[in-house]
Amino acid sequence: MNYNIAVIEGDGIGPEITREAIKVLDAVGKKFGHTFSYTHVLMGGCAIDAHGTALPQSTTDVCLASDSVLLGAIGGPQWDDLPGNQRPETGLLALRRAMGCFANIRPAKLWQPLKIACPLRTDIAEKGIDMLIVRELTGGIYFGDRGRDENGAYDTKRYSEHEVRRIAKIGFDMARLRGKKLHSIDKANVLESCRLWREVVADVAKDYPDVDYQDMLVDNTAMQLVKSPYMFDVILAPNMFGDILSDEAGAVTGSLGMLASASIGETKCGLYEPSHGSAPRMAGLNKANPLATILSAAMMLQYSFGLQAEAQAVEDAVLHCLETGVRTYDIVGDTGVTPVGTREMGDAVAAAVLA
Ligand code: IPM
Ligand code: MG
Image (cartoon, rainbow, N blue to C red; front, side, top):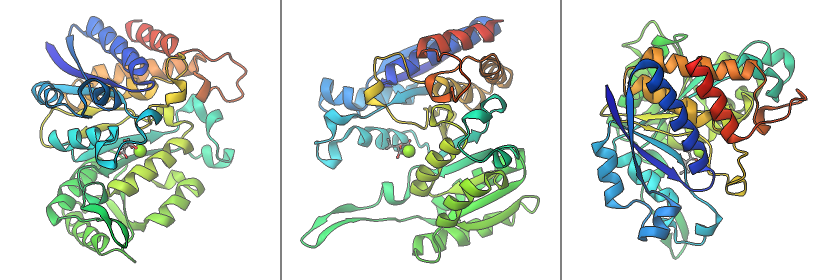
């Protein structure tokens, strides 16, 4: 079967990490008899430079006409002085919205061979960390009214019942497929939109009596993530809380360089991107860890194409590389091994897929 994938390399390390994910997808195609065709399009800073806008219409059109979208990362200091509504990030937000990708799925687990890279005390790491962040992606404060007036500046956080209900359902469905435990994150002691969030999630929970569900305030969650991360299974969070907690979860499990993500929603066509940024200072140095992007491509195989065995093959290949000591600089810890570069990591994973 042939799958059409739109590829947005983006800025900074984006082109390097997407290249490695494509290498791994091609290895999967070879092994399992699929073909993947790629259409490269621009979004982010590079699109601003080439077309004067972070998300050209042609990019949206190609993405919507594809089976799925693979994205590297966007942004960089050269676009920092642009007005807020013209920054590279606006392209990403608009694309998520245009594609209807309201659910961002971010698995954060401590890979067995990477315990050494975990910054937490050994007795905590020993208990195992394996959670899934389900982040609402197309609503909340990211998309509310914002601006400046004579008094200052404002951003608005607004959620409709419908937006909360549909993301909560995804959270509970995912919990059912995993450890049957869900923490719903809010700041309901202060924010009205969070009180609605809590009410609606509690209502959805009634349809999932088999899932152990609990509300948790976001500040407490930030603390529990470092104190007892082993207690979490599915974390359901509004847009910005999910953004913040996923970086924390990435750090707790060793490196943000391992944190994949899938943005899915109304159709099978999802947006797959690492949870980390474009690391401009590392661009072109063959240093970045491509595993978050490679694992995002594995999520594409699973969620957009329904290719479970293929997705598992990529995960197994990554595990094999980590077990045999193939490490980029961010996950080398004090193993004493010499870190490999972006390209070499991609080569190693692709070879392990084919082995
Ligand atoms: C992420 C990123 C983005 C976000 C930025 C680049 C707009 O931090 O995907 O986590 O905040 O969603
Ligand atoms: Mg983020």
